[in-house]
Amino acid sequence: ALVAAGEASGATSVYLHVDLDVLDPAELRGLLDPAPFGVAASALTAAIRALVARFELAGATVASYAPTGPEDLADDGPTILRIIGALGSSTPR
Image (tube, rainbow, N blue to C red; front, side, top):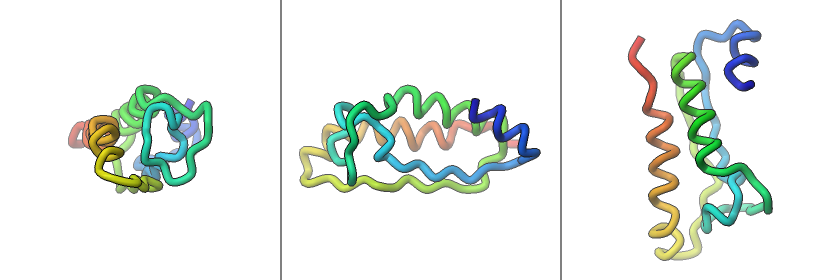
């Protein structure tokens, strides 16, 4: 649906603002403003990959991460790295 919306707009590139608060707090401990029943990290990374496969990535922001201690970062690090990796999964045009 995101790719279709981008195509319908006529966009050739996208700037992605990834607010981590959309994620389910069961998957990420260090959210700034956690809300239950958020998006699964796998769904978010799939959406990002689909967008960057179709559109040139003009830039990106990853926001709303506020770990309360090193334990949060140790638990959340792999998920955050997968999200950042999805942003870099575009093919050069």
